[in-house]
Length: 309
Image (tube, rainbow, N blue to C red; front, side, top):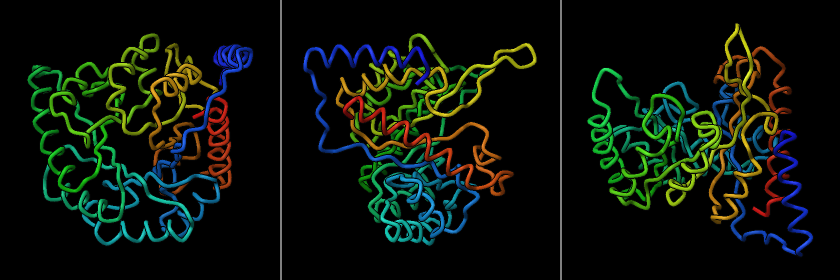
């Protein structure tokens, strides 16, 4: 954590120790997977699984989308191969990342295949707003599409999770997204909460959005960023975990407060020779990528241990 966040967490820890308050480790300890976008330069599934296991992750959050590790149209053939490779490496594929936005034959094929392999979670695509059209009319249209997705989720017993991605997307501030989840009212449709995007979207009030969407959080994404001055403009730049502006001290305390223990996917959006952008060929030594991943994973595991998650 950065200095400000570390001091806040340290003070909290001192108060807890003084009052003999000890966090109990939950029985269902959160499992940490890696978003496979950063490993697109490893196309071989066995090598991919071995690399992820060697870094220390519990599993792979696999890209099953155009230009991903598994193409949607090849999911029935290739996804079982990845799952088998992971079993050999003693890790799992608990979740996948898709571009699913509506019910159609490809969506059904992806969900049917994933569910048959024991995969319980998937991230959806994003609904983007057209600023030339009425916003609320678009929200209603997005809700209708989500209803169709929710029906397929129920059919195949798999949880679809929509990320609160910053920008001109549904759910960026969660206020427009939460009512949809409430109305559809499906235990298999929820949110993949991303505190990084929440902080970027509303740095001083993201906690309000978190408390609103909390009942629907089914998985969480972990990464960090900082703001840098480039060409006279303040810009967002990805960075190693704990070196940015995301207040992980507060965030983890909230996860603890609400007893949230869900699958975790770790993302890496800082410069790693193109790996951060899903490049198939990278410009740095692969060891630099895996070393960076291992460092961030160690940092996050330390925070979880300190918080009692």
